[in-house]
Image 1 (cartoon, one colour):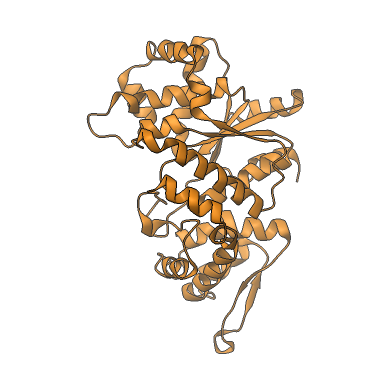
Image 2 (cartoon, rainbow, N blue to C red):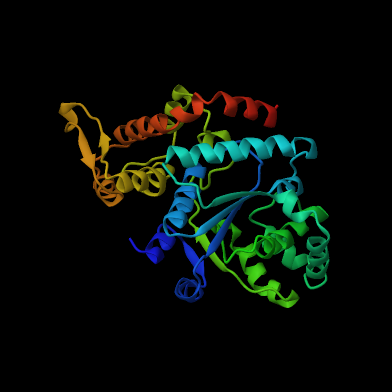
Amino acid sequence: MDKLELIKRNTAEILMEEELNELLKKKMEISVYWGTMPTGSISIAYFFHMLKIADFLRAGLKVKILIADLHAALNGVPWDILEARFEYYQRAIITILKTIGVNIKKLEFVKGSNLQLNGNYLNDILKLSMISNIHDCKKAASEVVKMSDNPKLGNLIYPLMQALDEEYLKTDIQFAGLDQRKIMVYARENLPKIGYKQRVEIMSPMIRGLIGEKMSSSIESTKIDLLNDEEIVRKKVNNAECAEGDPNNGIMALLQYFIMVLKEDKKEKFVVERPKKFGGDVKYSNYKEIEKDFVDKKLHPSDLKNAVAVEINELLKNFRGNKELHILYKKAYK
């Protein structure tokens, strides 16, 4: 797989792909950043992002991960636990990357407050604030920040900061979920107005929750935490929405964007164990094979869920036995 294919794999949209092609032709070292707020406890959804980070690193890109502690504060996290959240997030992310076998030599972690609490950054925030109206800021942040009908001023500053992070991190590309699209468009439209270049914006698809449309850090039933024990994982997977023959559910999303990406890269098969009276065990080499059998109702949701739970529990062994991670978690979510 060449550089462009690796960068584009499992993405939902790129603004603008022609600019990405130019970067690949003209620039020796291209840098990309992905940012995350240390808010709710980390779920297996982070594997989706880390697999994409792995693609960027394999493509030779320099990757920066911004742990945006100040963004978290602007989204309601108490100031006195920001440091503990930062430490937990950094250790958990490193453990995920090690679990999926990623070489992190060209990876850099950046703490948001170290980047953002300086005079030049504040000066640019004020510049952006004078060319941005309340409507535009509210619109840009609407899918990312928890806002009431009467939002806090900090909620509206959020998209200004995310736009500026592109410049102050000195990166060529921002990578984020599709829910960040409005902020990315805001950045492309407004950074040039204060003298900075537009960046390429790469978006991953939004992954369905186990229940409902979206995995949510605030709704336990939609997600599986890194530190959930085996029984909780099995229970959550078994309770997940997964109508027979309909692939539009969280279990199939886990397979498409997480489990089968790992399996295919390692050239391993996904095994569904079944009693002989129900057809016996079946092995799959790629997601399309699974989806076809599921849509054709040759693969029952119960059998599929059991196999998915086995795969997830195997991957989470590194987290359950990590004493340091458990200590950091307790400090971050006391």
